[in-house]
Length: 100
Image 1 (cartoon, rainbow, N blue to C red):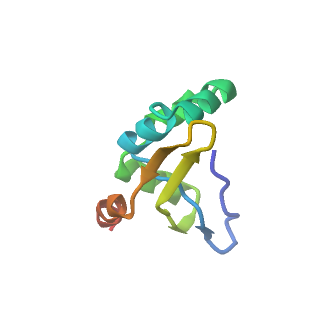
Image 2 (tube, rainbow, N blue to C red):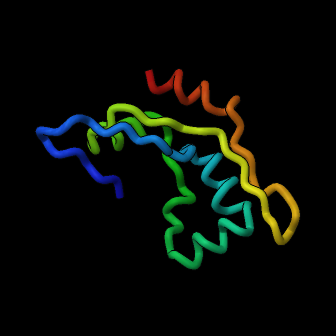
């Protein structure tokens, strides 16, 4: 659930927005054992579905979020001593282009 800006306030700038496409959400929340465990524990399996760009833009607009920053990210599994997942900078330009 996104918080929304009050009708008379300045639009929100979200400084940390995780990648949201179905492919990335599946890779991060289903294929990564550490994240899958959290998803199951918290009962938030809807996060694994992700959203296509047009729907995500609608959600941001409804919440009056004017801008969002989507960083590249990597997660390391200390116990397994392995990379859990990596969402590369190269995955972001198509999203930005689709959002225009």
